[in-house]
Image 1: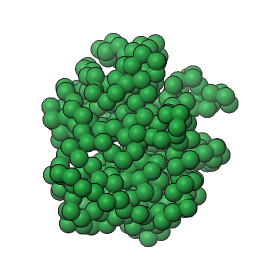
Image 2 (image 1 turned 120 degrees about the vertical axis):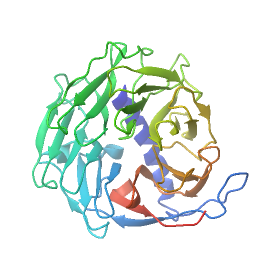
Image 3 (image 1 turned 180 degrees about the vertical axis):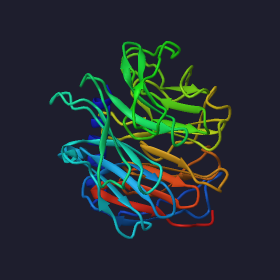
Image 4 (image 1 turned 60 degrees about the vertical axis):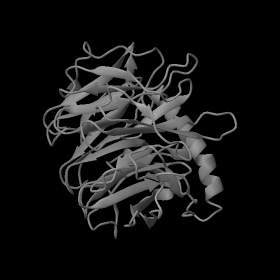
Length: 375
């Protein structure tokens, strides 16, 4: 389910990207209505050390940024890149043999220590894997290899430098979970007996931010709507590093809509974005929801201009967040009640560090840093 849905996402993104490539990649749309910012931000684009489409990014600090991707629009294989000078120069640090892989998540602790997640390839019989580096990508160690190539893992997230989780599509009616307590050096199946059952056919999108944490104990992951029965996307929440979970239905319409990305600015206030990317007319529809109680309940927010693959709060700006997707980027300055599109470039992953600014990644191996602005 996860692979099929992600490939559907990327096919839609490819169509949109082809059209947008014929136009200015940084055309801002006008905005009106209550809550929209008077001035819109902009991206400052740079090329990285790959031409593969990048899917996920981890902005560690002012100097260090890691990004991964591959497999977009039939691309053969993937790439892992990083910068340690604030984006002025980039290097390709893909694990040996990884040029055949599709990387979907990167979790970095600093300029030297990081983990990357490679998708399974069912057709080739290659299972999902997690690699870890302690020397900036000069060498990698495979720290997890799924026993079954049909087991799909989509996202990782860490509570601190030691404890983390990974989530994948359900095996039966419960999602697959992994846990680590040694900084990703080893991974083990997490108990799922306390994980609520989900509707048959549900799954998670491999966006790098379908699973997120906030603080040392809280984590959330979002699901896809179940095609054919109208079940709305759900959000699962743990308050104890994955020992027990609760689940909440979101008001995002079901059938084909999905939660692609989550972001929490505190253990209480969060955003979920995604939408519908499988329409017959190839017009993707954005969706966003917001919570003020840690995910116990969700309200629909304003509608982004299209399907959004990633979302992040901007540190130091109380109600401001950025969402990115195949046909552009949106900003909210009122906590998700309204959104304004400010760019039409194909960007799929976005992340902010506390003191190092915000970065997005997308088509043709490009990265973009958010320009400072006064909303």
